[in-house]
Image (cartoon, rainbow, N blue to C red; front, side):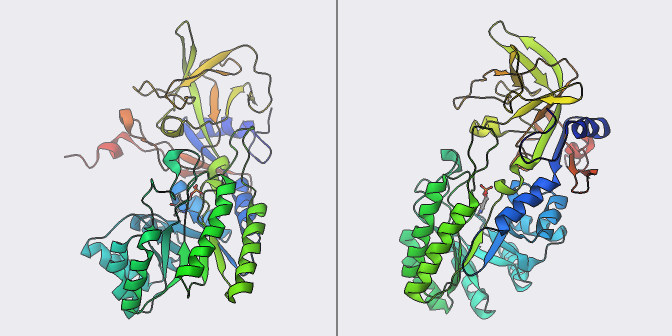
Amino acid sequence: MNKLNNFSTIRAADFSAAAERFATPVYVYDENLILTKCRECLDMPHAFGLIVRYAMKANSNRTLLQTITGAGLHIDASSLNEVLRASLAGVPYDKIMLTTQEAYTPAELDKLQDLLLRGLKYNVCSLRQLRDIAGFAAAHELELSIRVQPGIGSGESATRTTGDSYSCFGIHLSDLPEAAEYTSSQGIEFRKVHCHIGSGSNPNVWIQSIDVMLDIIARHFPRAECVSFGGGFKVARMPDEKPADLRLLGDYAKERIENFYQTTGRKLKVEIEPGTYIVANAGYAVARVIDKKSTGDFNFIITDGGMEINARPIMYGSRHPFYIMAGDTLKSSEFGDDPGEYEAIIAGKCCESSDMQTLTDDGYGYPVKMKEPDIGDLCVIGGVGAYCSAMTPFNYNSHTQIPEALFTAGGELRLIRRRQTLEQIVENEM
Ligand SMILES: *Cc1c(COP(=O)(O)O)cnc(C)c1O
């Protein structure tokens, strides 16, 4: 098998080339697929305008930020540092909105205010944040957004749900009257109302959140001109998973927003904030099989990259497709290649019993069918473009952060982040 899945343009030989040029383990990203996903989001049906913000916490590499904003997306930043990082990548402040749990010291608040004057958009997520910024926003006639905790949520696991009563993101519905009272006392009004109900949301709940948000806007936000439904679009990393259908979600949102216009005379623009959807399946981790063991009950293959390059199995019990490089072809039992009889657990090299790429929800490794690799063969893990490079405990066991490479739309393999050095790990120690 040479083609990795239905939509990838990377070929097996590109992984060998990446391993050869940059050593293993290394992340390889597929620019064509990222661009396809950007277009799918920009093509989502809408009634009165659509802005797509890339949730940069999913993967914040400078080159990827440039690819994605170059395709026409704006940025959703989760911290002041993310705002500055996007700016360092060349993204103008007026294309960035900050949605954060951070609350600021006076010095940080000065910094935020400076950035707001340069065009940064701010999404108020708590009453404290509102009190900190309202006066300044009024004085400078800045348009603010508000993140509402809509009371419904959905994520791929409970740990990735951000809209229900177990989660503390945004201003809760019960605090909206207090927020409204405070804003009117300051002479400001929210122009955008935002929610983000979780990561890997059930599309049916995402649809419900559209109605919930329009109802909240009708009741509480008479001057809002824009609604953001956040991110959370499900992707299919494994062949048996079903991705969110953006056309279907967009059609529904469009119909409800046209309906809202008919009953209220208000034309709402829409924003969405995909992170996972843009980059998840465009990322591969290329590792090498460095050892093989058996405990009698189970076979294990040990690779030179595990939880420190993909912590999603250990954090969420997530499943990822993987491929064994046999000669110059990739074999994947998940994508239809005959696996043969061999079964093994894929383990990493960290001193951590759950450093495995296949884990049940309660933390046990489980074996998967694969072509039996030899020591030295490549093992490629798919679906690692989102929340892997950006979110792993990469210095655990003093392993160095691994490099990132991009397979460009022009067919060129390019290093976009060097491997960290041991000196860099210890450089701030005294
Ligand atoms: C994380 C996040 C997103 C993106 O979530 P995905 O599941 O990666 O699409 C969007 N908006 C906000 C506010 C977020 O915190």
